[in-house]
Image (tube, rainbow, N blue to C red; front, side, top):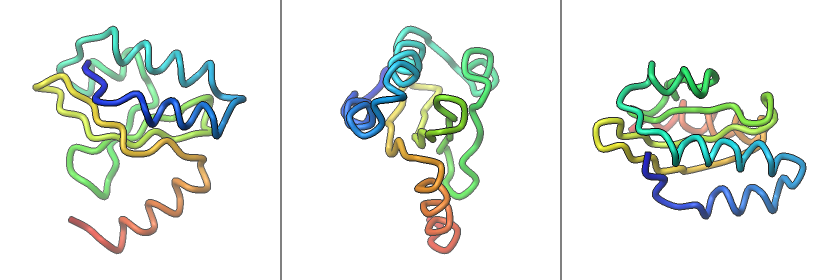
Amino acid sequence: MHVISRKPFNEAMLMYPNHELALTELLNVLEKKTLTQPEEMKRYIPSLDNFKHRDKWWVIDVSGNSLRLISYIDFRLHKIFVKHIVSHAEYDKLTAYDRGNKE
């Protein structure tokens, strides 16, 4: 997959230094695999789940369930755009906002 920007990962590693290893491992998996569909990605990232409030957006649990990565994934083009890497509490706030502001 082509990860459009490493910036969200770098920022998350600074904000959540205890989870740097898990973030690095996830980034390595995303960059090294060419995945064409969600089912295929789930083999490598079992926590992958559909972000129910936005089309083609996906959620990945990082470091157990401590962090959540929210991204737009185009499996056809093998591209992933990471929008947020946040704590679980921040994720709950984002989903509450998206529930009320659908595209």
